[in-house]
Image (cartoon, rainbow, N blue to C red):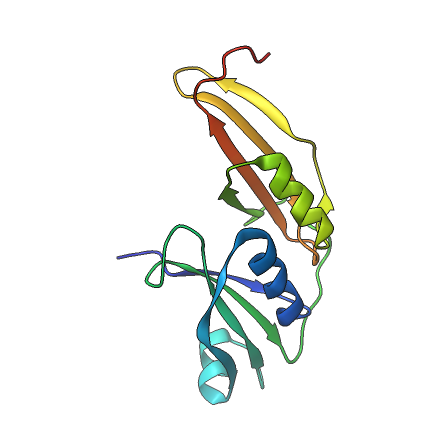
Length: 154
């Protein structure tokens, strides 16, 4: 058994995919998908479903690793703005070399700040540097890094 992918249903799959490519160095895993038919209705429980989009290779995994699947359905149901304490899936997380630099890149590419960069000493592990923000469509992302040799953090 292995983990395969996480899906984001996007208003604009091309724009959102580009955000993840630009900010997190994801790569498109061909082919682009464009699906419809009874088989899709049966699998999803929808009626007359159609979708298009891509799978993105995630950094650190290569071609055979899990992907981030970004699809736009022909008929989308829009939901309320999600927050970190809402029930269900709330965010995805990336480990990055520099949290502040990655956050700056995300904000330049349409991301929206949700929290602020925090440093927290975790006994026996090091210092966790992390922040939550939203991608251009409001999906929550956590970016984090571990500083093993930093000692003077409150």
